[in-house]
Image: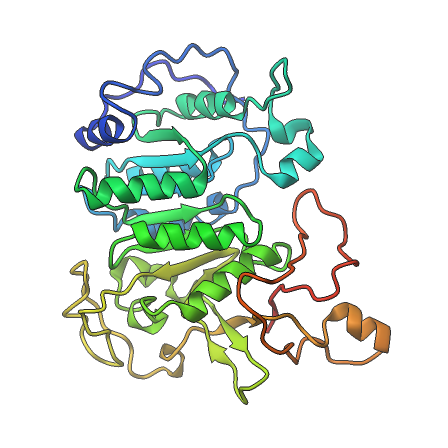
Length: 373
């Protein structure tokens, strides 16, 4: 149980503005919180909460007039982690949380605790659990929930930003659908909202969630405005402490003799993309970062071979593997995961679900998960 904190600090000017512009004049989600649901973090695991260094590195770089946008908030673990990270760096950053709080495919498959306390018609009460947990954490003055679906919420905020009604978020954290191609739609909508120099970060880039990996890889391999990691992982000063913990992924293609590095960073299960400013030159080896869009200076070490790309942790195919694990087991050949299938149209893959609420997908012959390098 989380001890309830009755007194909540005063709302910041930025929180008030975002609430008025997003929800409507005068609406404040926690203003009359009645505590009808007891605070309880019955889902204690949060991948972001285990990556304190990453959340703090990103939260510490948010400009005062910007905010963090979280898409997919469940019962509040990661939203509270973002708020704590900002507070640890003396920042009064607002965390905007977009979610329906109605559960995803895996939650409905397993039901039970995953849908939280249920209403008389069987509807999930995850939103009530979220409100109770956030209120109990003492961060209700920093966290602003918006009950919308992910793509609709992202497009709505993009419209407000385009009309200069709100600023664009410096960080967008994506932890929503986990389905394919839905995750790809979310990534593209989030990217449209993100400003140059901003970060798109997400959870569950691992072989248990091939749909997430597939969507991230398709976007990272085709978008033209993703900043190469070597341009900022050393020069962006907030990443200085975690640069040795950042890894990458490479993309294999049947037509290529060598693997192609993907322009993303990985820390644990978290994936990171930074939006490039196409009018600003990227930093080269040994050069000072005079033109970083956010004004952060630093030097890329010129005495290390690792600056070209981060060390790869995964190797990936966009179209599945010829020699995936089950094919290897059937033919008794080794090694596995060395050859890709020939190209097929993007957003037309048949990915397998391996995460929460799924059984071993043996019926899916070509799993699209990346594999350990």
